[in-house]
Every structure is written in structure tokens, then in C-alpha cells.
Image 1 (cartoon, helix red, strand yellow):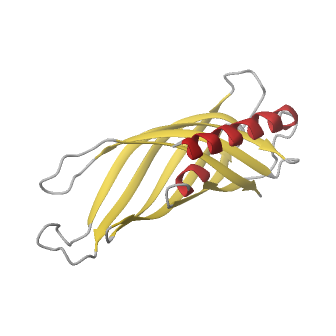
Image 2: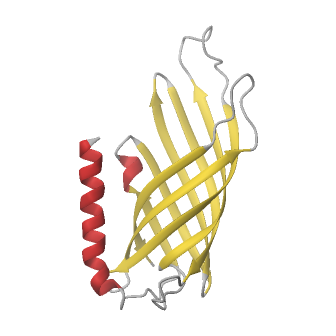
Length: 178
């Protein structure tokens, strides 16, 4: 836990330092591809591709994969729509600044182990409906972005015989604007 906290603190410090010059570097790019650095610390690969739709909103596609150990694995795909809000009166537009919006996610969990009498060996899908909030800083003459984010979701369905659990997550995406 200490290593994770130190990593998050270092990333936040770098982002804050770069923000001083980033205010003038509002990106003129239309897309950002990014990877969630926090999920990498626990073996999950999660990437996103964000498209500028209008001056104040965007559409994001996400995908992820993780090996949960003990022959469990899962993948997900999702989409979100973000509204960029100029809450701090920084004159920021889409792909830069504070954003909020709804999201939809599809998860598929599977078990391919040999203990089939304990676990149901069949995979199962979960659909989630939720929301997210993030703040994106653009730096490096508008080429790079760092984005702390928070999301939560509620399952639309559940695996038979199990509780439907809400999901929440925190991440820090590092991205490239193009």
C-alpha cells in the first residue's frame, strides 16, 4: 500500500508541477489515447481512447483485461460521454479540464481451472451503468495528458446465486494527444 501511495503522490506532484505551464497548452488535438497507471500496479491493463465531439464534450471508449489469479480472468469494454465544465473559470474546453458524464460497461469474467465442483466453470457477463468524473491536464505543448478520474457503476444483471455488487474505481490516466 505504501508503494501505491508513493506512486500516486509522485504522479500528482508531477501533474501539479506541469500544470503551471499546461494552462497555456490547451490541446488543439481531437483524440487522446491513454493508459490507467493505477490499474497497472495491480496487474490490470486498462486503456481508453477519447474523441472530441464538440467544443465542450467528448466520447470515450475503454477496454481492459486482468488476470485475477487462481485461473480467473476478466475483460471489459465500455463507453462514456463527457461534458467538460469550466468550473474553475480557466477557459478550458473539451479534452482539457474538469469533466463529468455517464458511462456503460460490459465485463466478462471466466474461470478455466480444474475445481469445477466448487466454482461454476462457465463465464458470465455483467453490464454496468454508472458515471465518472475526471480532471485532465494537457502539457508538453498540447501533446500529453494526465487525468485523475473516479467512476462508479451499478450492475444491470448479476450471476445466478450471487449478490449484485456496485463497482467503483479510481485511476490516473497518462495519455498522448493526437
